[in-house]
Length: 336
Image (tube, rainbow, N blue to C red; front, side, top):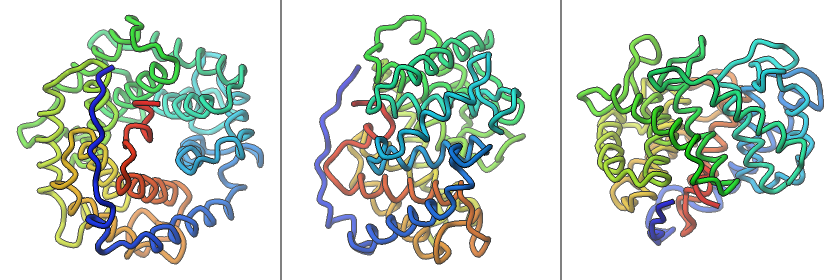
């Protein structure tokens, strides 16, 4: 794995309009909102939407509370399908590649702390399912998601698996990841963004996903130096799409959160914090100003929902990390 020196950065320099106490208070409040809705995301309380659950598990990981919520990770094993995948709705057998990779990613990361043999067996089954499902041209498919998004969801799971299991030299996994990487690179548009006209045509969310989940891993795992050039060019294209108020995609909360998180990782990885910090701060400030009393909806003034609130909380947790001297790569499991 390529290692890059950490770019030490002055916390006060980028938190001129978002003070530490304010950020901490909002993080605590939003976690409180999620806990008030625990019956609507925890498998310990019945059948659930696994996409909503994996969003909350990501927050648990980044809060450092994995041990406290160990049973929420373990319960995922019990609803795994016989083929090794997971369905969007727990306790059903319609496997989704998108859901499989993100659930597997969260329990794989959680098990770095929990060291539970049942979780490990579950992760191995998911790995085999994923590797056996790659298409000839390198992509992975899910009927509910674009090939681009589905392929990058696999990339991030495979990367996290290799890092957490010290398997960076596994040629079978490396070959699968690289074939997926090549598929994605061939889809980039002249604008510098990635677009699938059948899925989120604006390209912000898709580009943010691909940069975080495929291009940066290509740089860390495979030493693909031109991944840096592509990432920074795409980041500049993304910055050009930011609205004056700090949002993206017509004040889309989800896409603004994705854009901010992506720019944090890219800025930290390629030592460009000075360049991108004002853009990120502007986006985070808008998210904090336009949230509901507790939680976020998909757009301004829409009712809060668990998935978007978990996305918002994760964005703030990553922003707090971004303002420190600790590497962002840990929060994506690209390093231990």
